[in-house]
Amino acid sequence: MASRKYEQRLRAQAAEETRRRILDALYERLRVAPSEPVSIGLVAQKAGVARSTVYLIFGSRAGLFDAFGADLLHRGGFERMVRAVLQPDALEGLRGGIRGNVLMYAAHRDVLRALFSMAQLDADAVGGAVHRMEKGRAAGMGELAQRLSEQGVLRAGVTADEAATLLWVLTSFDCFDLLYTGRALTVDEIATTLVATAERTLCR
Image (cartoon, rainbow, N blue to C red; front, side, top):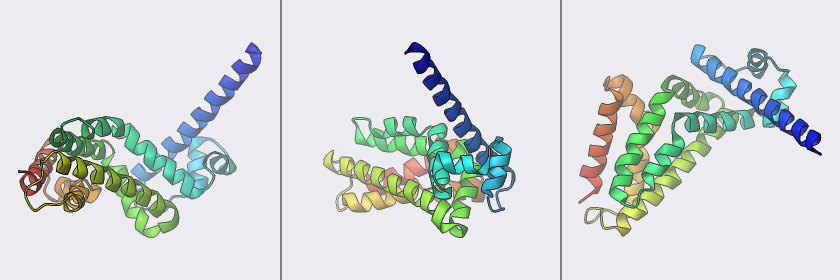
């Protein structure tokens, strides 16, 4: 029995290592050639596995990009950002959430830029993955806006829905990237600018 459990543990470890190699190979491909279509065969080759192994692990091209998007955010500090948003004080949650979001984008900016750009060209796989990432962010900003409203933080006349919409815009990758590339702001300057914009527009 002990031997069987050990073998199962080894198989699970090997499967996770293979999964990690594939995700790392996709990351490197997007980093090195952000404007080129992603070939699953090439990703498999870089990861040292058969093309069929990619589909065996992730199910489909869309499944690979779903997993990649989630992995990218988690490696960038997604859990830390969520903890910041969920602080009991909703205003502190707004500040910490926006700052954490900026840090998360900054950690993998070049690859995220490639991913978001590819979403327009590969709507089924990449576009679907990006859509699901954005849907989750929208839900999170909706919950934060509701807490801001319940705690009396929002300015008179500003509804929770209006606050959710603005927070969704301010926490978008494109908003971050415009300030990063178009205005050449530092990561800290971007976070400070976005937090200040949110507070001045939404809060008492």
